Length: 424
Image 1 (cartoon, rainbow, N blue to C red):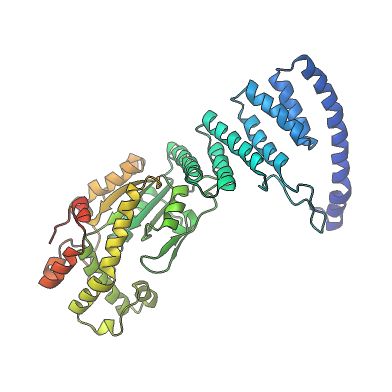
Image 2 (image 1 turned 30 degrees about the horizontal axis):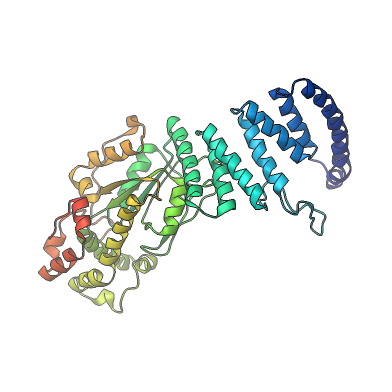
C-alpha cells in the first residue's frame, strides 16, 4: 500500500498528466479513423471506434452521432444502445459546467438534470432497447429509471422494473435456485410451521431481512422496505419471508419491484380469532410485553375478562374486522391489474386435511426442484404454547350462539365462497 503522500502525488500530478497524454493520442487516432470512415461511411466498426474515441475526448454530441449511425447499421449491438443512452444524458445535462466550491463538477454519468427534449430522447432510446432486447434485465431497468425521471412513478415505470424482476427470477430458477419466496400469512394460520418446513427442505438459512426487510408496527401494520436490488441489475437473493404484511398501497408498490409471485395464507377468521385470543393470553403467561403490544390496543382490564368477554371484544373491536379487511385487501390486490405478481391463496384448513397436497401446490407454484420435496411432518401441539391445537372448527364449540351469529354475519359472502368456509 502506498503512503498517503505518494498517493496524493499520483492523484494530483501523475493522473492528470496521463490524461493529457491520452488526449493527444486520441486526437491523433481520431484523424486516422476519420480518413478511414470517409472511405467506408457505412462501416459499423469504423463508426463504433470513432464513437468510442469521441467519448474518451468528452466530445459527447459527436460521439452520439456516431453511435446513432451504429444502431441504425447494426440494431442488435447492445453495447451501442447502452452507450447512446448514456450520451443522451450527458449531452442534455443542464449546468454541466457548474462546479462546487472545491472545483468538482456537479454532475456525472448518474445525474438526471435534463431538459424535456433530452428526457424524451433517453426514454425513446430505452424503449427501443426493450423492443430489441426483451430479455435484457439492464434494458428494462434503464427504461424504468428513465420513465421515473421523466414522468414520476408511472405505472409503465413500475411495469418495466417488474419485467426486470421476472427475468432475474426466471434466470435464478433456471439455475436451480429458489429466488425469493414471499408469503403473506394471516396471524394464527400456521405461518411459523410453513416457514420452518420451507427452510428445512430448501436448506435456506439466511434471515428474512437479508432478502427483504419488514418493519413490524403490530398487526396489521407491517411495512416492507425497498431492498437495494429492487431497481437495479443486481440479482435477487434466495430467501424465504413469511410475515403478516397487509396489502397497503406502499407494500404493493415494493412487491411489484421485487417478486413475480407470492403466497397468501389464510384461515377461517372465526377459528383464527379464537386462536388469537388464546395467543394473547399466552403472551401474558410468558411475560412477553412486545407480543401483547403487537396485539393492538387492548382495553383496560382485558386480561381480567372471562374468555367469552375476550372473544366478544375481539369480534367487535379488533381481530375479526381487521382480519376480514386484511383478507379482502389481498383478494382486491389479486384482481388489481396494476399489481403484477401472481398470487397463490392457501389456507390452514387444507394443511389440516391434506398437508402433502398443500405443500406440493406451493412447490409447483414456485417451480421448485421437485426432488427436494418431502412429506411434511405433523406439528406438535401443546396447551399454553405457541402451537396450541391447530383445529379448524373449535370455534363452533366455544363461541356462544350470539357470537357465532355476529361473527358469521361479519364475514362477506365473497370470502365464504372463495375459501369454502361454512356460513355458520
